[in-house]
Image 1 (cartoon, rainbow, N blue to C red):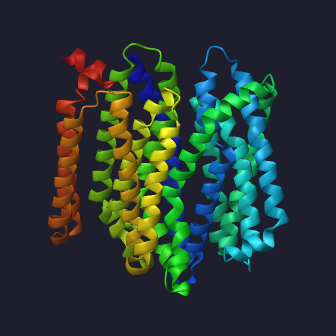
Image 2: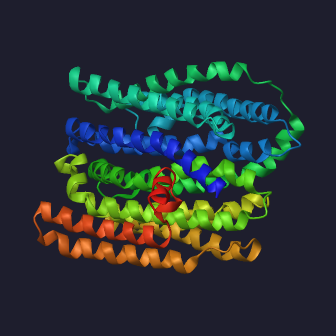
Image 3: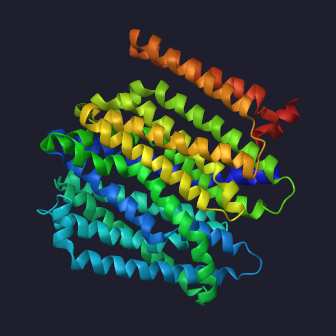
Length: 484
């Protein structure tokens, strides 16, 4: 129970920076969708370029974030040596990446369709390099359980990013997608300076033998990470390449990219949970009750993500105003994308069985197979169904990886997940979602919100009654027990 409370506390801190940050970044969505009209295709360009940056960030970090936790928690290794060895590796990869990008920018920009604007790729290439160099210091903060410093730096980036966007787009009238990338570069460079004092406190030592062991652990994680990030961004990379109308491709991708922002609450929750959960899992691996802990964590993760799903679906009549009116035609994909994100979160929770027994190759295969399914769905169906194929491709890809990991994991390293309880909550969510979509459209907005909120509160009341009694909660539980 103490570990679960620690997980809840750290998830709240990481979640605050992630959720508040994403919420504030939502303010940029109406800003961009208002100042960058749909027909300009600028938002589609932004969506496409950010998809490439996400992919290259995974390549440059080379799975070293998870590897850092694995080896820093090994009592035979010195954490500073683990960090400095991993950091030197990422720095070397970053230098090679930047040399290649600047040396061959003309050919790269031509092949990606940005021959008129190579500066977009150069700016975001530097952003990726700086993000890669920040990734391990951020991970080391998590290892050291310095959640507040982690969250404060993330929030500083977010506030600075929002301020500069408002300054350029609203006050200065600079509405080109160029300034989206330029502002990101400024903010990322600024945050990098805050890690300099931490780096000076490290006892730097490069260990070649340790690096070889870390590589053997990290390369399957790299493959897993590539496949995982492709599951998230491949649709946005593939879309302009296979959509039959080249001129319309960025326009439709902009519609899809803006609507996906609403669905990203699932990514926020999963990310916050991951930041808190990953260090605890490796530290917990030596405890006798570890399997019960992992099973409970999975159930509560599902409960809260399903509750978030219902909140987004139920309050869609209000949330739709996050994006500009021209972009709202794609709102129907939001529940589908959220379902895919929940599957991704489940897959992440399931992934620890092979990480803890150093069989990360399984994760690589699961992710590659899921990624292949996603690619197949997108390539075959985007020409006919547009961005709807992107949404369902995510469900197909994540669903495949999730099922494979569960089935094989229960054979190799079984964990007693409460499958019946989980399926019950999934079924309840499906029923409530069906009611929202079949009843609400016939009601005025205020009545829609009342009806949908009653369903959400009913779900929450059931959770409290069955799995989360008030007496077990911090602060509230003390008062509840005292009154009782």
